Length: 593
View 1 (spheres, rainbow, N blue to C red):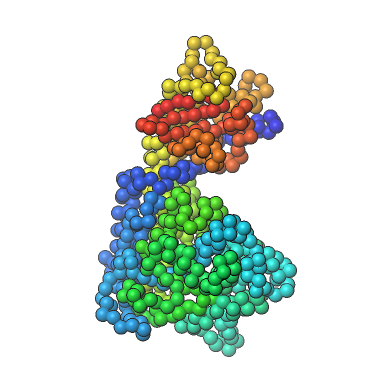
View 2: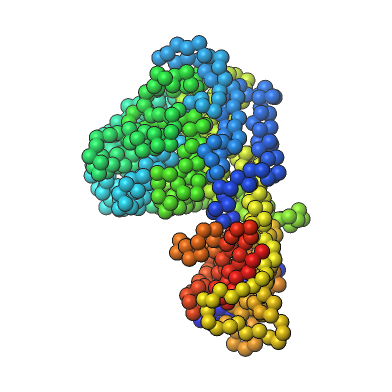
């Protein structure tokens, strides 16, 4: 064991010669603090986003309709909005209105198409809560939907074990569509037009989705890959509805369940599935040219693409479910489980999660412009949608505490560019991610950095810490550098507590240093519910990791504990009154700043 520790410490020591690339996330409770919204970097970034979105209109290169919102973990009210373009480029055949010249607002309603898939996944998480976690994303579909079946070969090759999560993350192998387009490549007949595809989507019932999936070969073996599947999400919705009705004694469609369990509780009054309510017709956007304004998608495909919504409503959804500290209508554990990648595409830049398209963005964290390898990679959890003249995008950057909504409709005019939310979000995030990261680092510095002194014994250990000679100083020094919180020194009665940890692996009086290097240790937010509860409100547990490491060290030394069971490599910072306390239980010490 000692030899293993020495090897680990020696390898980690190499990191002292390179710049840090492992930048821990900020503590979760800071993500919903409005302090960051007043940070100059965030204020400037939002101004730049506004200029970015306005430019194509000022340059007269687009006439498309656009509705954009940025939402923060602190509130469902957007911190930024942008709206441009006409609401109705032509009229539906169902209703005549004199509002064709009205402009788009944050309450204007768009088809959001495949963004609906994220709601289908959320409905599965709600089912988990309602069933006291007896149903999870890992539950096989057959247990919820007895009518689900596949070809015999596929069923016996893992198809019987396809889970809700595999459907949500497109890893089931279920074909993209539950219908045949009847293309004849030999005779060159058939076209993939909006009208043709729209008619097929409109015809999809729950029963024929299940039937067609059952007799169609899987695209790949379940769990082997990930490929987009509208039919798979249709099966997911059918499974949720089947089990929901079983435990509730109801006979509701998935669309009715979504309204009852998601849209209603979140007060999403501008969102719906199915026919357009008469009261909302004035707010409905209508693209130019051929479109799906009159299309009524079949219930079999409603979980995949049937929803209409507005920017304001979608910010409510992002905030309440995916951003605020305690999620609404789903369990915290289910959110943590859902916001993890389950598959990485071969390009290494894209990942897939349950109803998430995950894009990786790396940004510099170094305060020194000459240093290029001090970076952090953020995961953008997004979902796109497109169809019938509308395009949509929602996303969240969970470890920065904000998200985007981008809705557009085409003007259908020759000589003008179309706007693509799936492109716009990247340009916006390139501006916003560095700004929010910098602001959160500044907040960490204000809350935790500084010199802690006035050391006092807490009385949990009867032994007295020995001191050498007359030097009985007790202090800790915390700094933020390149967006990393470091503990440079932790000294108790004149002795380095960090060196004391290293000495546990030394055979003699000297040995490799991991915790007691000159740079100190990086502090990474940690602590389960039990550890945090031990110290009360305002407590944040941090684990020590090697300073200036190129790669994140996921090994942990929690197994090395003091006589009371507290890990030697964890400290606690507590906001108490007008100051902050630092506690290090192994030395029974509390300091204040």
